[in-house]
Image (cartoon, rainbow, N blue to C red; front, side, top):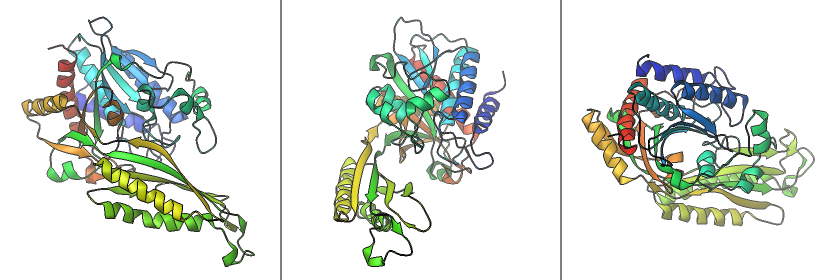
Length: 409
């Protein structure tokens, strides 16, 4: 078999070709043609590595190496394989590839675990198509109900069910999984920030993941002719939205301690150059390592929004996602550090400023997470890059950790 690093590069490069924007980064939205291509590749590799493959009613992919214990819970290892628009090739896939290669090492070394090992490739972590994010893990854990899943639509009005059926997936398969069938969850992710690269440390052992909340804010005014409606007679939804959005950064700055707030998506209707905007829909993303800061900013956000509600302008904020800050499992954290030391791989403790599927699973099972350096700290852009050597290091650490967790030593 080709060496580990070469296989990792081949996986990453192949998955990177499944993009709707060739030459301009990775755009792989959930249930798209590119999703289908990546899915087929991952399923093929899972089978090649001796895993039994199945998909659930969300389209999450599981490749299972059976254990010798009957009906025992599985050690899950993996990440997501969707992307943001014009993103990079490493955010998500690096973790799926790491899972695949841990399974490959089990096969190469002819290791038969006591507890099953399952490589998992999750859908819609980014929320780039259906909003909210973390959809695969929230569905598995039952945080996203069947009814709410069915109601979700993309910007073109296509439902999750329609989109799944379009690429040949079965939305009638079970979605929620009994937590008793999961023993632990391990996830590798690129750091998406500059700390590891600046410190020249190859491994970050994640201690906590920030809490985050996302809102969708709708501002409704009145459309009118851009030339014939006097300035004092306008109910311009975009002007109101712009005034609000410009004030948001101050809410986070006032709160401090690393609290951040972002408006990343803005849609204007009817979106005509000579039409006063009737409606604006935009997102607000708030994150902090302390829940009290998130709560404070939500309260201030609601007060600010309420102050813009008038007879002529209506503003509505809908909370789409709320995740509390999450600590990783202390025993697994200790194991990851111990194994890194044994393998003579320098590591440091690190906190995650981004949300990950690991934070969802942490309420249901024991979770461990590793970061590897990101070149120039860049992510969610075509320039995103991580060294395959660093991914290979993480695979070795997770291989040793998975052996312990599956009871093979």
